[in-house]
Image (cartoon, rainbow, N blue to C red; front, side, top):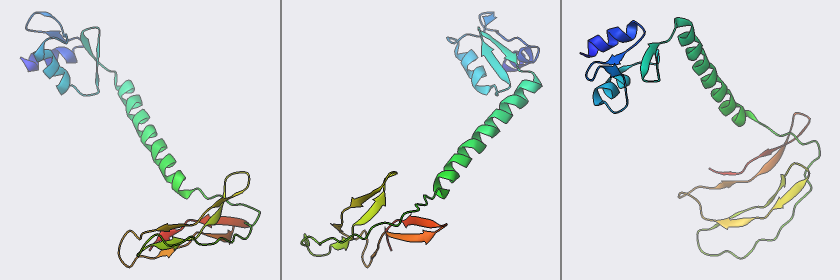
Length: 154
């Protein structure tokens, strides 16, 4: 019976063979058929119609363009680098008292906020794993300006 429906779809119109009416949402048999259909068919107003080949190609190209666009955005975010022409001012801070055994001091630094440098104060932190050490934030002279290299655990 499913083959009869699919042959009817290929002719451009499908009707539910059980109650002899167009495909509908209540019929479990119709729902099974809709799950088997590919993107080449459109379900509208209770009828299943085959898409023309040109529309299938357009749908495929839209999907490809979307995937390429999202991939470009994702990779572009990792490649962004802010170059600042003005060197960061020297920053001197005083350590607070260690809160307990096993903590490591992470120095404060000057961070660029878009219009000027802002102080990010130092802090005590526990290493994420044994024998890890902190590599401090630093400003590197690059591309005719200064670029922030984020601190990290090594």
